[in-house]
Length: 192
View 1 (cartoon, rainbow, N blue to C red):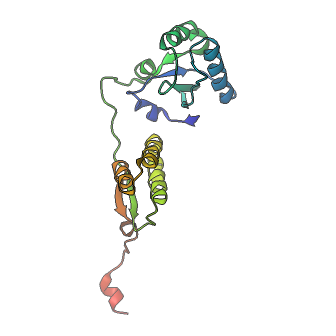
View 2: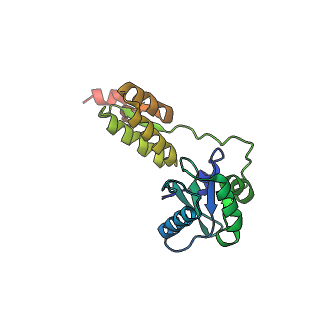
View 3: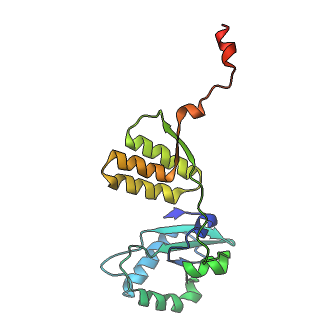
């Protein structure tokens, strides 16, 4: 379970998920309960569960977003369950929640955030070190989802050169010297 902001939620126009509204108490119990309920209803297949679940706050309510990506389920049965249980759980699709609750124009592509600068030149060149620095830069700029995606792509790349190219897709690679430039007059230093 990961916590996201409504700003991060607004960028998810290309995804689909089930939003459960007004969740109180232990959120892990909510996730386990929904997974158990949907398994008993024959909606989740082959012992699969919703693993990619996000938590967000909106209008004073705690809400859960169950991503439909990579889940073995019967979509028709889920749609019927959502309608039947709407009064109890406030269940809605992400594609309905974004325009109706957050005012997102679903016809507009999500605004792309600029790549943050990341001082990698001059760092220890171990790819895991560079990946960690780039990941931290992304997270500090509100791009936690991109950080996760970048890490997954790097670990699957199988090549140092490919991994460096992937990092460059997510951050502007700069030098550590750019951050450490002394702010003094060179002529004064020579007079010593």
